[in-house]
Length: 80
Image 1: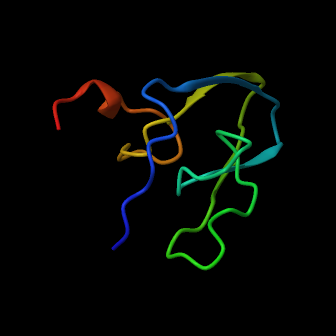
Image 2: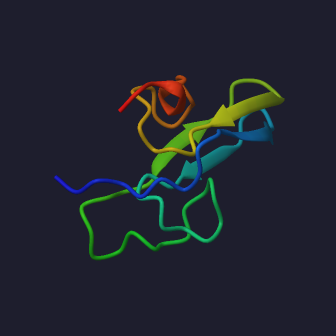
């Protein structure tokens, strides 16, 4: 399996709206982080759909190592 590129070390604080869908970049290559721009085409990666339950701020993973895709689980702070 391919390894995702770390887009950055910290999560992306993002305001989301209830009922809206967002497509998180899982490969780390998108120029529109944390969202997919199609850069994964031709790879094993696919974007991860996130549908907001509430209008709030969420933290999308930037290091691409989270076990709770697409949201940050603190993996960026764990020793590798």
